[in-house]
Image (cartoon, rainbow over all chains, first blue to last red; front, top):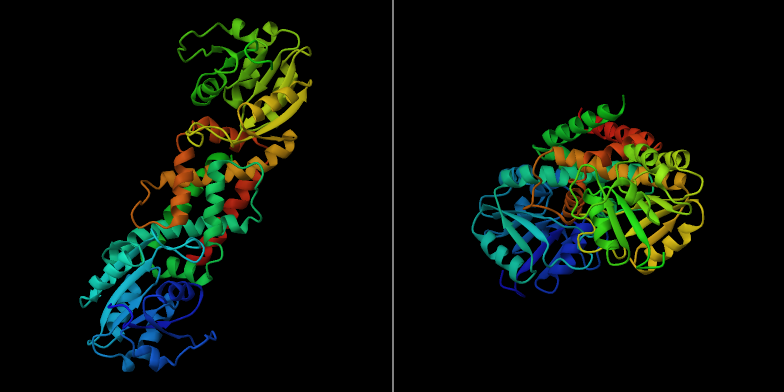
Length: 239
Length: 239
């Protein structure tokens, strides 16, 4: 990515797409396409697809469709990058639906609009090389220019670890959120930490929880273990 | 509590008793009694019971027994203070077992050896006036000298709020702790917060979880709601 000259087509201008746009705008020529959200200066699907780098900031369940839609417009050597919360499934979709002449990189930024409200520097991002060598330059850009903590990994290793990290966080946040307003007066330091965590993810769109729980092949096992342990604990006190 | 002259008899020298001793030592004449732990310079039960202020840093389930044991030694006007995680039950025990000529104050320091590892200033403490006016002077001492955030409240209000705060924290910490080593590499900010919360309470003695879950009359309802919500979530994904 040689700055300034690099054109980036951003597909999806939801919460995360907007975060990407804010942080990439100073470094690249951004062309945004979203069929549902009106974007000032937004471009057509074809125009966004003809950029040097294409970022798919759409729900994991829509990766396949968007790949099929843009496949015919992509230029040879272009790099397609996703930002989904799981990696195995969307990477398989990209490999299957995108022409051989494009490069593919999977990423999962381990932060969101809430947790990165005060900047993205120091936050973590998982980077999965898939096809081509562009991942190296992208990794350098993310590290040096955006100051991210880049973790290069295999899609499977990502999904295994993320199943526990995100699966547990979202299960806990969902259950806590469902319990109504949380106390703020007689709180302990540990409770305050959990409440902050809940606050960070509670506004995530429902597609995030769905992606984590249904598209991550390791999530069911984590969920099962969590609920089993909870059941044991419940039995211990409800006698 | 006019400093220096005030004698404080501390019953119980476990994790929390040691924390109390460390922070009170500069301000009062401390006399420690613990039947199970060898304390350098420890005193007899009778000697500790004859102080101006008596602090019961024993498990909630042992409050009644210790009150019966010390009742005959207490001086008129002495102040007996507990530090248990629930307030209704131990306060009822103290009122029933302690002679009318002693004052009674219930407290619940909303911190522990882990969360207050870097000092107790700014941490919260619930203070329940029970018998006599000594709670006022104690509140002033805790605020001004120990810099605590003192919340004066009724035992019932404490237990209702603490049931949610501590009940949820310990349920989550127990379930997470049972799941084995938590990931540290591909973590999100929200997961890191939850992991820190788990770390803070995981070394609490089992008596703490037991007191919260069985001695707090509001805990069962919180637990029930938590597990019900979890069940709904489980059903949603396990189809």
